[in-house]
Length: 394
Image (cartoon, rainbow, N blue to C red; front, side, top):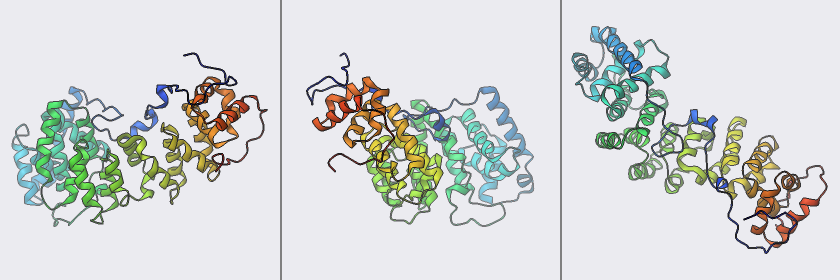
């Protein structure tokens, strides 16, 4: 179908299909480094380390374990020392719990920064035993981390303080695993959901966000448990349905949206249904950086609600909303022409002149009054921008 000129009269209500790219949600490349990938998500899983690197890392971990001061001196909880010794006797056949116990005892002796330290441990387990083994060992290590060497077991430690780089690495590996490997991980992790501690169940849901029944159950439970905000955030990064988001809404602090890992991982899992929560974040005590990120997500979201939210906040928060509204207009020019005409916004004139084809495509979707405003904008002299007045007739 040939696009009509904006000044041409057309019958209002004629069905014109919007461009496909205005309805497709794509996460910008700049955000992807913050996203914890999920299986089937919008962000692809990273490639695993090459075989030579994995082998060298594994050899280093074994060497450090054999020379570990804690292990050689027999310091620590027997619940860790005994399985760690079994791992040292034969790392190839020792189970995930033994690997986790060893890692808990030697982690501080590995000569790597914390982020690399735990990434290497999980990748080493995956390279030598597969991603299912690595995922199970990662959950066990989160448990073993609660057992300080030579001290009693603390009742609970927030996820942020028990190796924050551990479970995300395991989840990324599962996101790129084969179907058989993923099924094996599910079978191994299912048994770890038993027991009184909700943190372990939530860790399993975080690793396997595709298990909607598990995530549903954890979301329903956490809102009644006065859970630590870090635990709620971990579960929010597993959410993938509107029902799960609605259940968590009361437990998730809007201020937590300032965390880019949480925000962009939720964007990956939930997409456009996140708009209402983000709008609430703009009305709360979110800092300038958080507001800027939220506005950027709204500008990337291909829905009318997201665009209208930017319009609403343009007059209140010029510092962040105006620039993101301009980006949304460039990214979704047909939607912008339609909604700017509905709102009788003075940005409409410049937009129509910059995107005449988009304006022509939007014209048949408009009410008669909005269509007249769009046609008039094509001939209106350019003037200084005025305040957003809101929907015409409001």
